[in-house]
Amino acid sequence: EMAFDAGDFDAADAAADRAIAGDPKLSQGLLYNGLVSLNRARRDKADAAAWKAARAYIVRANKLDPNNAQPLVTYYSSFRMEGIDPTKTAVAGLIRAQELAPEDDGLRFMAMTERVREGDLESAKQLLRPLAYNPHAGPDNDAAKLLAALTAIKDPKLAQAALDEVMKGQSASDDEKNNREGDKGDKSLRPLR
Image 1 (spheres, rainbow, N blue to C red):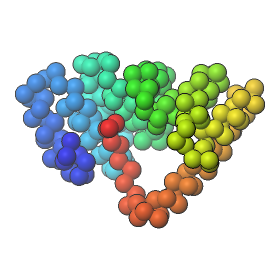
Image 2: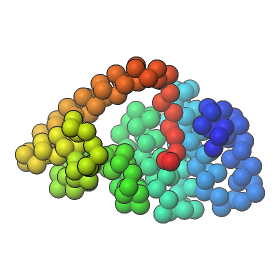
Image 3: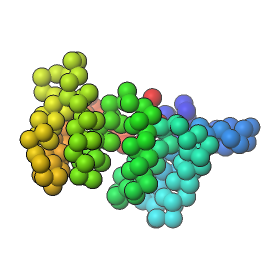
């Protein structure tokens, strides 16, 4: 984990291999093999076969520990990393991951966006409510704005446009924050914490 966090993918991969050699049923080792492979695939602008091979580690980790949210969200995120739409299986995995880790606001928001894309506005609003009504959120709460928009909208296509508008505003404020804080542009896929 430390090697991965430091960006030393070779050391992280070797450590994961050693962990798996000691315990072949260690899902965390497979997960780190997958995370390393996914980040390398993005860095190297790999072909579809390399992405598929990287995902195989994640699938194996999920089979060993099916109630662990991390492999499910990593599998879903791998498609976004590759720049392609996630499969239905990946979306179902994301929804399951959110059920397993309902306290994770980022995961909740990701699941909500998929529900909007599917046109399931009631489920999207249900996922969004805890974020919208968070008493610790500031007055400029994007989740509250989005919930109000989704409540007023009946057409799923218009809901997607409302989501896109909030995401565009959120992305701009994230970019501004990163510029202020000196973000180095590290967009590596990381495990949930």
